[in-house]
Length: 457
Image (cartoon, rainbow, N blue to C red; front, side, top):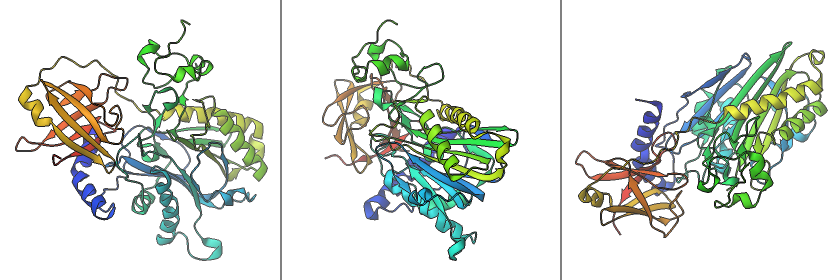
């Protein structure tokens, strides 16, 4: 079975447990903590930095831990209008000594902040740190909002998931794409692209100076390559293709209208870390953070909007001599390495294809009719009429199904249907052993949202 198949099967198998738990007391006890690496990775030569990821595939949502085994001095630079961070005030006190144990990125919006504090208690529970004043665990971090329009349930990375990831740390390797905190990240909503993104990383070493960039892209703006092309986007039909970012930007806000035509020529956040081993003063470390964060506006456009919570951490492990590289060269290189990390965050998303002509019997279509719950605030109603299916959101706007408005779907197989729209939202039905319909899945695959059939009203 493929990785996507395993994830989807795990989500489906746990759905009843999750929803019964949510309905009874909102607990997440039935969720499985997945700490494996399932896709491409970056391998980097820095054994003193260990990385751990954890995911609840039933969300899907997750977290990422970057652990400094010998400690690191850290500063923070927040730019967006909606940041959600933990322990960042302590980073503004001017300490340049390596004293931070870890940086944590998490999904789950504000509820994911639990993951940051859980890493600290986990270090104490493991005996790595104690209650002594000069030996207490120190971690900082930030979260992204992967709720609302990204997924339909309210599962979040909790203490149990964080401590499972802490126990599964690996040196010198970082998973890319829809992994860890980037499990359900998206980018490009400003122009309606709404493409999946994830977490990325890049590494370079020159003359003994190591520079690593780690990023989770959940941006309102779009990821852009060095040629000015959108890296991943669901273009509006009126675009006639995908225009350059410069044309979209110069024509904003008109270009945000899905009916806008180019000429012939949600809450969001990007959280990131730039880390080096070069000795840096507190002032130099702050300047590194400021320059790299500023440079990211080239790779994500627009950047640091009112709807973004963009937060960058800059760290040094304080091991390589300052004479090995000038601070100006370090800061400039770091900005380019961060751009590489942002590009590496984009996962492979299946290309859209026109739905084939498939005939499904009216009897089978009638069997699909009914109500399907995808979370506490997401219910779909499926209707059959004259040999065709339509889907109506009854609670909340669900992807391309606006609340109260029937949307026709076309069959692309016996049990799978798609919206003939910009995002080609897919809906597949699940059959039990007795042949009865037991549930449905929105967008089957890596980012599946699993729903349970509900009693008819």
